[in-house]
Image 1 (cartoon, rainbow, N blue to C red):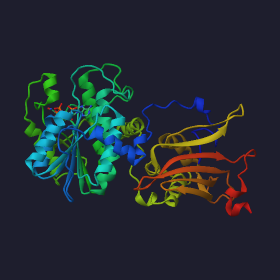
Image 2: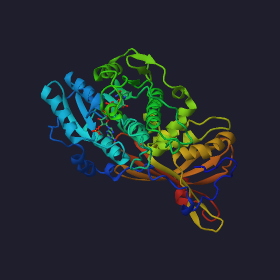
Image 3: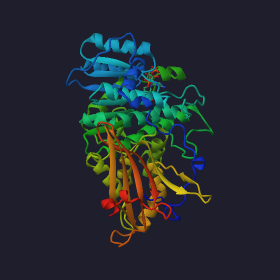
Image 4: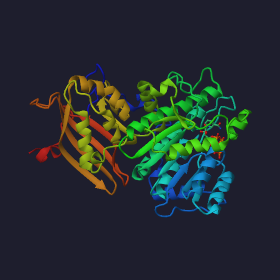
Length: 481
Ligand SMILES: NC(=O)c1ccc[n+]([C@@H]2O[C@H](COP(=O)([O-])OP(=O)(O)OC[C@H]3O[C@@H](n4cnc5c(N)ncnc54)[C@H](OP(=O)(O)O)[C@@H]3O)[C@@H](O)[C@H]2O)c1
């Protein structure tokens, strides 16, 4: 790999670990619970609780998840989906109200339901929720991201992850949950994702996303709701051609739901009106993916939703804060160890002036993946500099594109045990593919994981060759002979 920074030189000495840039505690590491089936199962009693009988879907039954379906609009949507025969995953924090909704659906006899408790103010709970659903369900046809926390109380609250409360509950957790459930939504296509936003929309100030200044509950709510619309536009682009259609909407103004009653506002619309609007986005084939609706009508959201630069900033920030890896991968890139390693070399390589496909690059890495060059400090000690794939793309990307960089693997030694593998991949780097001699050689140590659906790069850790550390013959083609 290459650790060149803009204006820098190849393979600079990394900062020793103690000086490595501090990383937010929320950065993605796969929770231990995702690593063993036993751990996932042990999470179940905490999630799928309640007095209600917990039904499982029949083969072929449409499966719909409605977040925040323990009250208000979400409850009405869950009942409607159940009444038409769907299996509904009911979600919220209130076990009692969740059980009531599940019992109502199961008792009515057309559809079926289960309740899962998860607090969206906790990324750990969202991750466990998503992992549990992935383990429990082999399909997800409809995902309605409806859960939300309103503008009242007019108080700046923080989540357990340290983020502004509405931004995390209404938006970041939706982003995380949707990305984690994406394999099921994709494999169930034609499928649908509906983000229940609001007409209350305030542009995001990227210098103060967590609203430390001039806070109002309304501003926090409205920023999070616009972020949902921006996310919907990104999803539509990412999912083009996959059969997954996405939409967002303002359901209705001042329905008599929990958040409106807490605000003390006089209701102006019925919950049924809001539910009609959401169900139109669930069912209609008559709109382009990504469309925003005001009630039943296609509408224009706040201008920031159409600002590609703002959307890219929001997406990068959201990936960073939630620890979600890159965009969906091309299946051909991740079907085998050979394929994913070839894709890494291919995507970083190219002549000067040729833009690299950084989305393809990001798509190869697992949540929380790192790239770390090892180098020597002026004092003579060795250390590694830790970068996320985003940081690598930002720091080294411009240099690679300006100067030309071709890296090829000349030898590989792989060890594999079940779903984990590591590979010592010896590389040569050239400015032009046709340069007779490489300007650098070294070893990329890849760590890889197969999660049952694809291969992921967990880490690439490398050391450039130097007089102190010539590449050993056993890591050269033909054993160096
Ligand atoms: N009401 C309106 O007029 C209106 C207008 C525009 C948009 N909307 C949108 O409609 C959606 C539904 O809201 P609503 O009006 O039906 O309000 P609501 O009655 O207050 O319902 C909110 C739902 O979200 C869940 N929720 C809230 N905080 C949560 C958390 N931290 N973790 C997990 N679940 C959480 C609640 O579950 P628990 O209570 O079990 O925690 C509840 O099921 C929201 O996205 C809202 O922004 C509503």
